[in-house]
Length: 476
Length: 81
Image 1 (cartoon, rainbow over the protein chains, first blue to last red):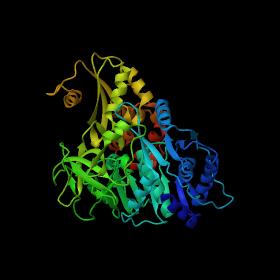
Image 2: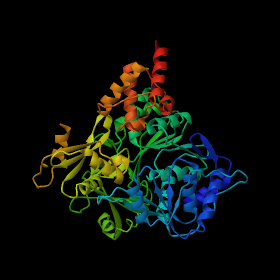
Image 3: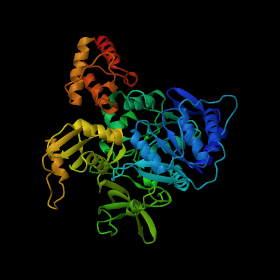
Image 4: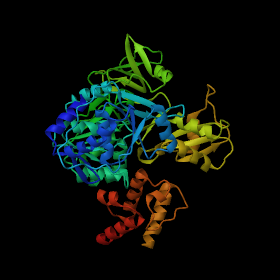
């Protein structure tokens, strides 16, 4: 469905700008001329799972489209990841062919359109998230999941068309990139990506300002870091500002409002397992938005999705009672890649319906809108990246060959930013070794800012490691 | 230029909590541990406060090394005086 919509747009708007990357514009016809090059090569490849070495270039985006149209599954391999992590991802996903798309250039000799999509039940993509066992966890998203998402997302009432200029600021290893890139192409609109070179956050603001972007989905960290610059930021062309990937402070939006006088602000929430976004909250244009403890309400489920909140005993929570948020519907993945036990842990059946346990502690207000209060496990979000602290801990313990305990703590520092710290039990030793080992195994955004040593870890009343106490010790 | 580099070294060392930072006009953020996209916004904000100047996003986005930053500071402070 989403591929058919892009196909139609590519026929209607062949000469309009599809993408602008590092200042270079590519028409729909030029984009699909590269898709055509990759697509014809894929026809001779048996493997159903294709790795794409990502970069901010037209070849990468065209390769994603080619893989999708060819009825295959794409997996992004990021050059920013340590080699070990990419190798692990390739092994888990059983990648049979890798495309290195940098250098692919458009063919200007003819007009190209999107091909007819190959009918298939192969997954659309597999995104790898942080896993508590020390290994990345594969989330396969089927074509049915993606189409259900597209259908629900396009019914949110966006007033967008082929004249819109839409931002794509997310790494392709992150699922919000999928909607930031594919949705504009269903409209005949233009996608503006953020340069890799230089400083990402400054680049985002520069692209928003320079190209008069009309639709932008951003991580709230972009706004937090831009706060000192709000006095010189005016984006009157912006029609929609979506905040996503982590909880957003209502005060941040209130302060930012003067920079975006004509924009509707929307808070979109969703775990990767529920295909990008599964709830939406459109902030009122007048008056205060709904919030809890200063964090924006996450709204209601998208069309076709259902939510439940259950308490610690597995009973349905009443309004205003907190519990874990469960989601069901056609956007929910069928299960983790090659991991039946994790899938079983993450899924639950209630009254004959299969629900995904989000791990987010939430409650409903009297009107049925949802507020998110935090996580029930050791997951944190940093710069929008979902990080399971257990993954880093387990790597750190492996470095010490299981002889030392290690705990990761997330510490709030200036400007609402969060830093990760690694705390190791025992006598101090040179932290370079463990940092070097972590750098080989985990993504750069998962790296601790500092390593601390505590002789003996404090324990709580249940004789478990007292993480809060450890946090207090390292802060002091 | 030297005076600006000394001030920048002080600002960056303080913000990155490190005392062994050596800057030259050719130094890029990649050469300094901890100078990334996030801390860059904090550094720029501090530089603006210290010198009573304001950069445009294009200035910040197009800055490639310490030399560029020094040049921008020089230009802004001279147009302020």
